[in-house]
Image 1: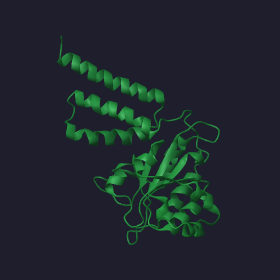
Image 2: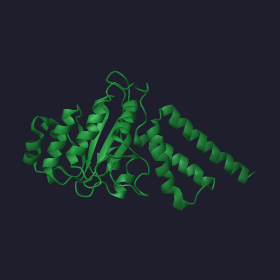
Image 3: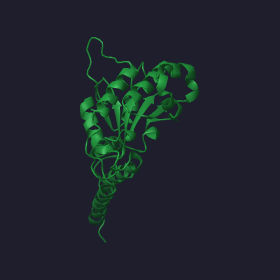
Image 4: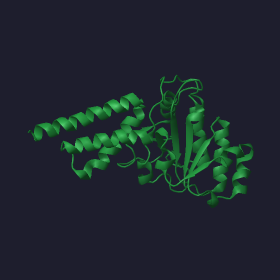
Length: 247
């Protein structure tokens, strides 16, 4: 596990003190890449620093974005944390230890190549909304009591960060997996090729892309593998057109 390749993304957090507590939780586990969906001026700098204590550098270096998609575009995988299940809630949700094991295989080690992985945390009041979780490639859940299931934001970050910290010795796959921005080219190639064959109607394209994004991000594709998949689906579409429109 290369902890430098772990990004923590907070989605529109409301409480400045929680952001400070998140910084401290990250520092406890050797993490430093904090990304926030929102505007920096929305937070009280003094309140953040009061809870961050000696982890203020994480706050000072935090980068702000307008969406989860943009915040995670350089990552090979983005995992949204949620306690709720449902049709639009990613289906299978990994446990923290399962997520950290997968992240360890992707992020590499300090001396080996790897790719970035994002852990995404929702707003304190609502958690990740359905549409926000859809921007992530997979879901992670932290088991808690049915009688009081909601975790404080910084506590959730602490639990996930701890499991990632404990995976530091995981062996790297030996290459750098493609990031989500690059993976979009593969996903668009697959969906457009399938559409050309009549596999689905235009209305089903979005669901198909979500499906492939979830599967392929977990696979941690190399550049060569992504390119080969694109060639396979493009050839399928070409052969279909050739046989349906013979000269």
